[in-house]
Length: 313
Figure 1: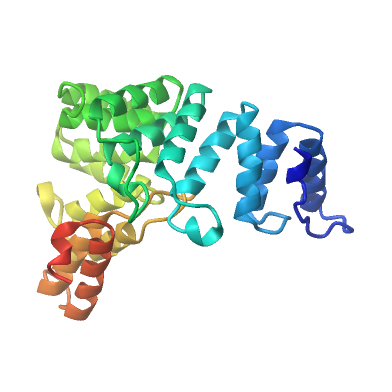
Figure 2: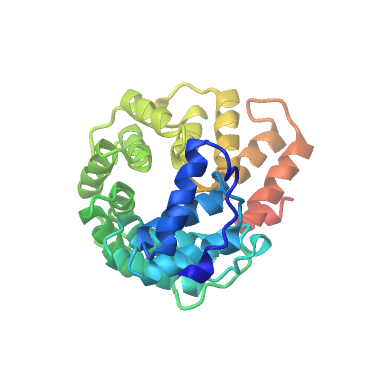
């Protein structure tokens, strides 16, 4: 691994604890510690006490993954499907990402199973503008991978598996089973699980309806989970007996439309949320009409793959 260790550390002569830790990781990685290379790769990707360099981070992850560190495989896979990958020196490559995620999954990294399953659910959304190679939509395969993640304490995997049971995709439709999985995920700390569970309580699908509890769960999940924001926005438009609040709905739809680009920070934007927001603004449905702003959200929904919006932008 010596060829990888030209990483430029910041503040080498200083006493900053972070810089000292980076130097120690650098030395350990040079000595063949694959886990240290993974940690150093993460710091290099983020620019934490080292110069930010995606190419170098990818090299460190690749070396660590080759030595059996599953988390490094997953981190490298994420780089290959990041929207800004090409501009940062890591080529978009969905086939490579799928292979790396499978390696991570096989090595017990539950999130690797979950993210690979995501690819089988919607290959077109993996890398915008890039056709996913070697991955075709397969809900049965996705269910298998989500189940592996769930069994490995990957709570988002439980949430996604519940979604498949709720809608009968790749498995037989079973709303009560879906609610049980949503509950397990939410109790285990998955905000996506709480979002799905909130939606179930709000609509009474698979469980006795409790709109108040549904709203509470959705509000809690919305901090970082865009599914929660989107479903709560729908309720705020007067759905399922919840008091209408169009202005609040606009705020929530916009948050879900903006989303986040990093899985570590939250969840990605929801194209339908951009479209729904555009519709509200275009018609002035409960808020001041603003066709110019509406057009902007239609264009964003179109760029995110929501085809119906392309005709409105």
